[in-house]
Image (cartoon, rainbow over all chains, first blue to last red; front, side, top):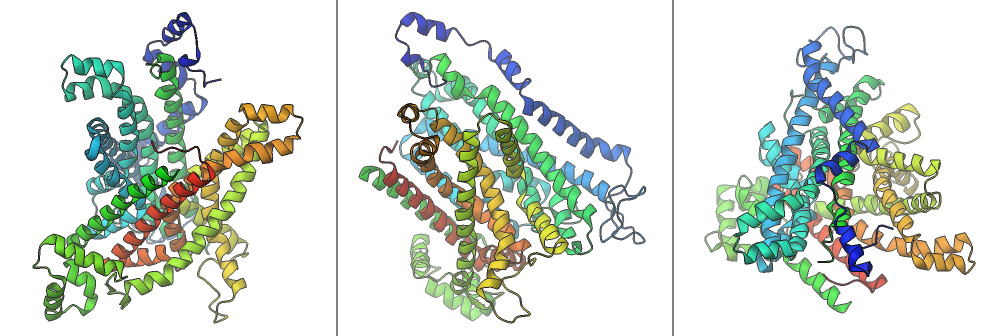
Length: 310
Length: 317
């Protein structure tokens, strides 16, 4: 069973055996991640998606903006492989461009949120006391207001550009990472190697960079990966609701929202491609996230490093 | 347990205070400021000056905050300029419809998630378990808005089984319980599918973990039937953390309800919020953000306190 901790082992000799178990983390990561069945599919999925969104427009020269007034609401044909919408716009070209914005904004938002979350979590966890309590109540507050409501509210105050959208999404989603980071820092700062560093005169910046950061990296990478998926979903949901990036910038969510008026005409080519694209993206990123979790979960390997026993 | 409960309550109070401070700040950020938020389209310069005086905008900020908070606690959320009504009356009309949607979905999702989780745990490692795991994973990644559109396209427009939106059939002129229920089927289903995907996955792992415990082996060794072991020994303990999970899922459920109400034209708080965003009706937007924040904080608090009642082992960390 996995709940076999070093503390359960009586003889010191056996404990030494357990401590010498871990190999260099690079090989452990490669051994688990590249053999994780879902992670491989996720990598393949994201490569295909990136190729479709960024290389696709180089191979397929349809304009996402041109209005083909003679071909309104056309089903897929040789000329328009995914048909046209009610304004006669080329759906395949729009799907590709929509993928570009989704991926760019999604990754940028997740990485910004990660940066805020790490700094916030390290400060809260390391400072402790009243500052930690106050900082965590702010996190509680952000957790209590559904992200979509907050985003719609902020969206109604400004007209978002891609850059602003990145900041808005980061602002509404960093708190998850900060909670995880704070919890890790709380448990790390009472460990011997941190105390040893403190007693030998290391400053807080040195400890954060050299001791805390490397140890929270695994948790952060896993959380950030899932945050990319969440960000892509949020962008699509916002634009489905008519917020987010203003038209005519194509987005999968807005494409789907536009198609709702043509449901009675059974315009299936307007409904399935954008929805499948969102699902494809979320599944691929989640698969990779699961792979990362299996390969990087520090809580699993912490037992073997003897961390809890110290 | 008393200590835990008190600690938990004391943790919720500062969050509520922070919520009110954040909302107060937002009112001042909103174009037009507090007077316009209170008055809406009735805002004439004379009235604005009068409101500014009565709100004490020349007084220190903390006095303004206390006055505003006093109004809020008495239920004065301001006046909507697109609906020409007080925000409180609009929320009172629409909030119950959203709560019915969300509570019904929570109840149905629980039943399904528990059945699926227990079934999977009892068939652990078999093909049916893997199939269900894959299905739940797939549904978990399914965007709510796409699921909603697909439901309308298949069950409403394609098969014609259910109405595509609204609260009741306007051709009948009045709402009947039957008509209301029929209109609830699709919106509730979308919310249920999303929740079951999350909670079913959780129930499976919770049940599987419980089944490895020593007291389960003891129960089996006593010669109890597998059904008794599952239902009386394992299920009860696996259910406990589900209470906390519901509390934590509240924000996601409200977000889901917003999208669903918009797709199905279901006149709840989400649709009110969405319409208000189109109109830039800030009093409604702020009022709903405050109400939802309070509901979520209280919901989480109640969930945690309930957990302490059913599981006395819990300690405040």
